[in-house]
Image 1 (cartoon, one colour):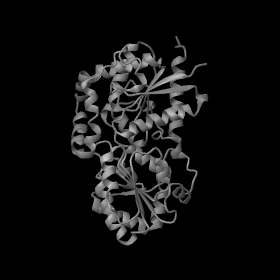
Image 2 (spheres, rainbow, N blue to C red):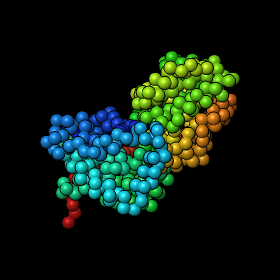
Image 3 (cartoon, rainbow, N blue to C red):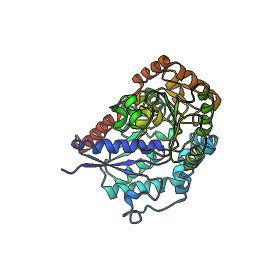
Image 4 (cartoon, rainbow, N blue to C red):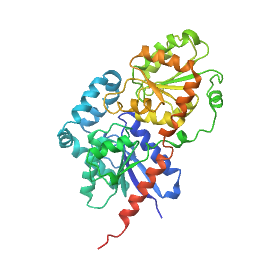
Length: 400
């Protein structure tokens, strides 16, 4: 029997949505007994390669929206305040209707084309901008196509995630579930599964020392991992520079810094050209973030939901920077109030807090222990279970 094809609607506006969709695809591919074949598709751009052979024939054409989507990365790096303004304006009553009046037909037609090209029997969304268009595409299909949405934000839920006729929602935390319910989603349609992650984040097979040796790090000395999401945001260069001065005033030779710059090549080149007081590894985009997290004592990062979830899954304490206005704001109290990390307001405070964390190994260990109740290592499997359940339910003959 051929596998059930499931269309997964994702986007590269930030790395979190793509990380979730790829985790789901990998989970289905690694469990063929489920009988699911997940296919990623980005309906927010016209250049998605997965449907290149049928794009024009099915009405997937370029639009001005393609260029708008490309502004997300530069905006959160250089003008996060502008993103915060856009986020809050979009949440005002009536703004969703305006967006869908302008762009909804384009996104809907792309989703419809993808459904036909893949012969999908269910659709999963991991992005708030496509939920209403996904529902509209199903309505145009005139058939009972199961719809599931994975909310990729841990705590804060933008109103554009919510559409009351979507069959199932999965969220990362009880806070997110309550937010969805407050937006009009039936509690019976909402499941707290955690955010889906790649299986490598739930399967730590090496000790810290072993992983450091594998990565060419000194196994006997502390390692700090600095991140800024896929776009290298969060004043990453300033934070690392401040920590280089303060932390290494006493620990110049014994503390290793690892900086992952993501897609931000200018940042990577700039940091690689600097002279550092102590051993420092500068990286661009990497496929083995889980290994670098495993090798680290602390993860210093902006509080993106995926990065936070990944660090919690590995069991690493977090030092969190100022949130991107909007979807990241609730992640700081979620981590800090549960004792799994600290938060800083500026690079100077980051350096002071990091020095304190490294100077007290027992407190750092305790923070790591407090990550355990916050993680959901089986989130990917649980979401795939729900997809299977929706497909099977949709195939049952209706009761007269």
